[in-house]
Amino acid sequence: MSAIVTRWWWVRHAPIDAPSGTIAGRLDLPADLTDTGAVAAMAARLPFEALWLTTPLRRCRDTARALMDAKGEGLPLQVVPELTEQDFGRWQGRTHADLSAEEPEAVAAFWQAPATATPPEGESFAGLVTRTAAAVEALTGRHCGRDIVMVGHAGPIRAALGHALGLPPERMLALSVDCLHLTRLDHIAGEGPGTWRLTAANIPPR
View 1 (cartoon, helix red, strand yellow):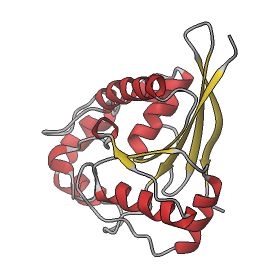
View 2: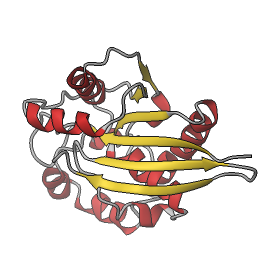
View 3: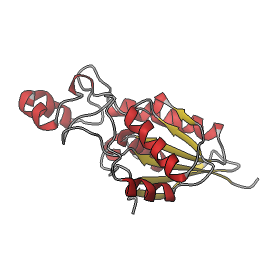
View 4: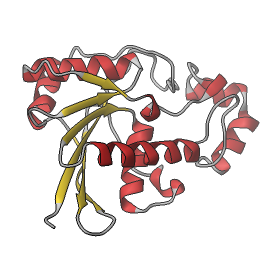
């Protein structure tokens, strides 16, 4: 049996239109897509006739549509709720600086174990990793051999990278995932359970 390669093209959404240091989480904030040159350059890196996925949040949906428009493609855009960003609960919408000043003890406790700690009324990064890995494996099996463009968030991209490389959640948090940057993961299916290969990480538009 010859190997079947499924290519994942992960693109983090464009920068959010919010004060610097804002904890966005699952807030439905808009993306700043005014740098049309960067959008066009990133679109040129992506394959034609791919399966396009995104999350329910506006910053990802709008970035995905801008990339598709730049490529001149009018393909369907599938929303995958399981790949939404980490839920930071009551901390969402606040800046890191304000949060540290107003809740220093809670913030200090969180940073003692950032992969497993749960923000108030939110979700742990480890929980995000579990749902991301399950979604990625299911989608890979369902669309085996395809190019899959996923316009998403930093947390799930770190989780997908870590899942492919066999990293624990604590190590995944050290991975850089910048806005409008590309990460490429290939899944190779053969006679065994299949393997993952990292082919590009955090590549800028230009």
